Length: 257
Image 1 (cartoon, helix red, strand yellow):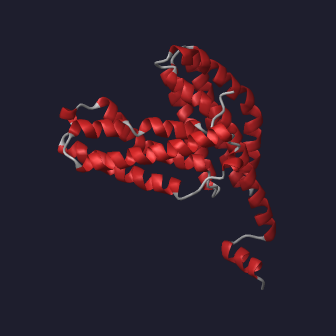
Image 2: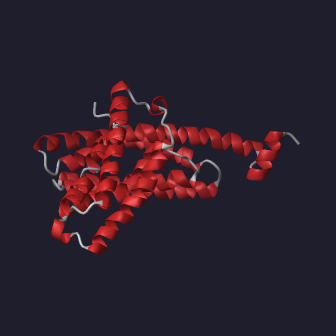
Image 3: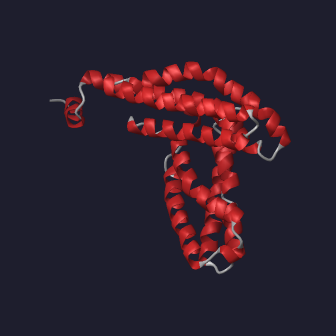
C-alpha cells in the first residue's frame, strides 16, 4: 500500500472523493472571495449610512451591486457546497435559502431608509456562510475575522456605551473574559498568513490590510495594559479603540469601485 492509499484509508476517502473535495474547496474559496468583494462594501456602508449622509447615498449603489451579482455567485456557492452527496446538497440549499431571506430583508429595510435593520440582516449572511464553509472543512481567512468580531464587539460597545461609573467589578471581569477570547482568536488570525493574491486583493487593499492588522494588534496590547490598570476611563477608551482598525482589516476584502 502506498502512502496516498494509506492516507485515503485513514481519512475514509476514496480517490474519487478526494478529487471531488479538493476542487470544491478551492472553488468555494474563490467564490467566497468574489462574493465578499461586493458584500463587504454593502455591509460596511449600511453601518456608515446610519450617521453619514454621504454614505446614505452610496449604500444603495453598493447594495444594488451585491444584488446584481448574487444570483451567479449563489449558483457557484450551491455547486461547491453541494459537492459530496445528497446530504450536503440539501444543507447547501437550506443555507442559501437563508441567505436569500437575509438579502431580501436587507433590501426591504434599505428601501425604507432603515439602515440599521439593513445592516443587521446583512450581518447574518457572513455568519451563515462561515458555518457552511467550516462544515466543509474550508479555512477561509475572512471567517476568522467574523469569529473575532463577536468578542471584539462586546469590548467596543462597552467602550462606547459605558461610563466609568458603570465599570463595576463584575463588568470589569466581563470585559476581561471578552478580551481573553478576542486575544486567542486574534492570534489565530496572525498565525495563519494570508496570501493576498488568492483573495484577489490589489496593492491598495493589501497595504490597508497589513497596516490595519498592525494597528489592531497595538490596540489589543493597549487594552491589555488598561485592563491591568486602575483607570476606568482609560480602559473604556482602549476598549472602544479596537474597533476602527478591525473595521479596516475587514473592509480591505471589499471593493468599492
